[in-house]
Length: 291
Image (cartoon, rainbow, N blue to C red; front, side):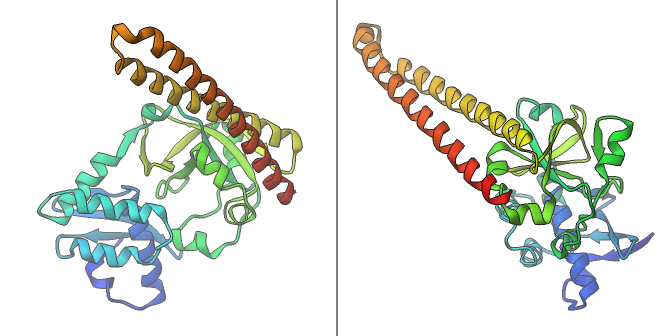
């Protein structure tokens, strides 16, 4: 397998090297690399050829920041930058290994959340996907032999979204890039996943349900699920507020505190109902425009 040193292509203006650099920074962000001796190796695919990109201490954090400008609109780029600045290691290789150690976690840590993945049963042609090396995957074919979907090249991993990001992704632009079908998935407990506070990226997921945005019944299933998730989040916040409230009160003021708490709880309940109502309207309007 051909090996290329990242230092040798950093200043290149060649279109092929541009794609190499874009794939390299994306894989660094996701922790998808391994350490060999005193350097880091990143495996990518370019024109159906597998390449090994070597990252050594002959480049700096600033070089990586310049590399990250290739995909400036990605939230994960800002995530990488902030983490690299915070990590106090004396070499780039040590810094990247520390970054990976801090942000790659077992799937068991994410099983208490619901995760969503947009997909298309038909191949998508999109330049944005080409830059990231995100090839179309026939998930329906994979699901014929079980309920697990995976990255067949074992290179880039699969993306899944939180409920908040799922709501943000209910638009035609997201459907264009990723597809208008939806998996509800769960990470596998012993696999490693990268979490940038919005997306979860890992090698495999278990599929719990499949939805089609062209099917009104499936839209209702998604709507009810999102409402349930947001309700649990609000209840958790209310419990936290209640616990903090009682911690601030001494035993002599419990009666007055109870009255204040009851009034606050009623207000929170009314607010939550309004939130659910508005969320329902928002999703209904968005879905209506997409149909």
